[in-house]
Image 1 (cartoon, rainbow, N blue to C red):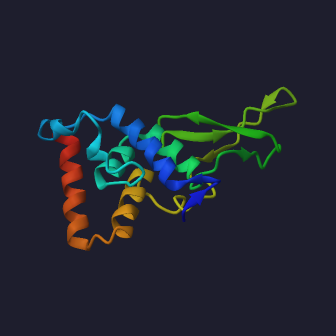
Image 2: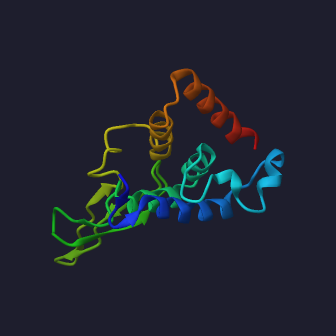
Amino acid sequence: MDSVNSIPMTQLVKEYQQNVWQKVSVPRAFSSCRKDGALMGEPGVAKVIFVYELCKTPDLLHEFLRKAGLLKKDLTCAKCNSPMKLRSKDINDGAVWTCRNRINKKECGLQKSVRFGSWFSCSKLTMGEIFFLTYLIVKGYGTDKILFVATFSLLNSFWL
């Protein structure tokens, strides 16, 4: 898959490498990489640390997944046929599609998961976990290495 929605994937990755780099808190051991963001990988080529940090930032991850065509960019209410809005919500995914259209002075109120219509919809894992594991599998990581990286990631979230 070279491009999605006419945006080359390398261009999308490059854009988000810069966004993630601005938000990341790099451990002291990697401080020499702080100046140019080399830790994120070559521009347009995702390294595991980039994908990991992207997955830790839900807003950026959702935006990236929408631009990559893996999440819906818009949704129409099945109840009243009005456009739905993506609203922040204190839930696992951090957002939900909501219809605020008024019908006979009453709000429609239909809600759909941000995962609706995507391949994320059938899992209880977070979208970040699914995306990160998918990256590791596509890159050819074996089970032992995936377990190591997942354990390191879990420990990293507590200590860094």
